[in-house]
Image: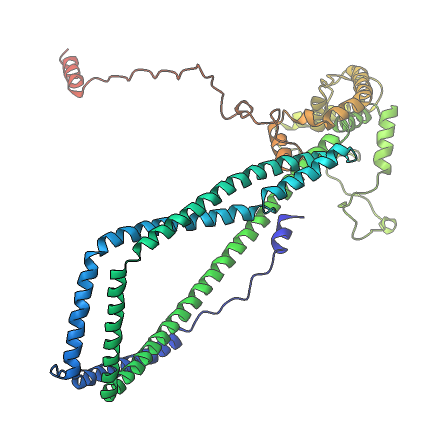
Length: 520
């Protein structure tokens, strides 16, 4: 599966959240803030009324009784404060021991919860059962190994249960110590003071209840203040909800866009990687196809063409000519758009002056009067050379060859003939090369098809490695010596020292020497 398909096969992203309307948000926020301001103004008015209705009469019997009880309550607090230091130390110690006890109990529960057994006896029974099965010898080797491993694991768990039992005894000791400390805190005098403190508090609460009955209007104002406070908190919560909803929607839209950009970037990166991987695979496959092609194919085709030119009667030339004549037209061969019937054409073909029927003087530049004789002589020699090349007998004139034939001979590594007498030797060389290439074609093709043949080529090695054809092992890793742009330098080599700078004479000395030369 391609990387692009993996990206496309992922779960589709959720629906795109819409961005909140900023104008609507401003309208809702202004309305909620206005209602909050009204609730705050109402709360201020109720507080002012409550301050005016609060009684300040301190000469009433209830007020005096309250003062007496509060004085006695303060005295009890003073007495309790004297014994508070020692009691505080004991309470702190109890608290530390209690925290330690809770920690050990939690650790005990955690350790026991990790095991499937509740006690060391259960573990020992399971060990005995497994050991009995192993000793019976009826188990398979795999099951016996597993049972032995389980026995080792159970032995470790058994030792863990032993440590847990020791920890449980420590927990019981802590509980006993905490109980003793709490019993020491139970003092009768302190208990009497605490009871008196509770009684005074109850009496003060009763007086307060009587005051509540006497001041019902104040209670109504306080209730109204409570309702106003609740209204104020509700309006504040509405304002906060509007802001939270707006900014949450903005964050959701921003997160969605960020995620969409990330997905697009991943898709683009995956497509780009797949594209380049395909290009590398195509290049590597092209190199492999080129290596798998028959060897000497181009040389054999060129040699057959040259042999057909110099010796049309040879078997190889006849086979090449027959193959060329019977070959099917190519895919992109030119097709005739119309066919001209030459049977109805009558008359005489008009030709230039000085040209015969068998020669077309192409690409010959015209010269002046001085070069006319030379041009006519060159044409005669060319026609004579071509005729001698086509015939069997040798001539004494010059031997001319076209540039295509000379280039083909150069690519085959054969010197072109200087005369008609060199043609038979040339034909023999061509036949020998054709026979050698045909005989060595199978071996050379196998050699070129092997991957080791391409391992010394940096470009092919790189393409095949990136395409996954070769593994990037130590024998295929690139070395800097394969790069023609950088030359390797040994570890012990030192950089070449720079030449000393050329010191030029000052301009003052130069002017002085020039003045002396003028005087001389």
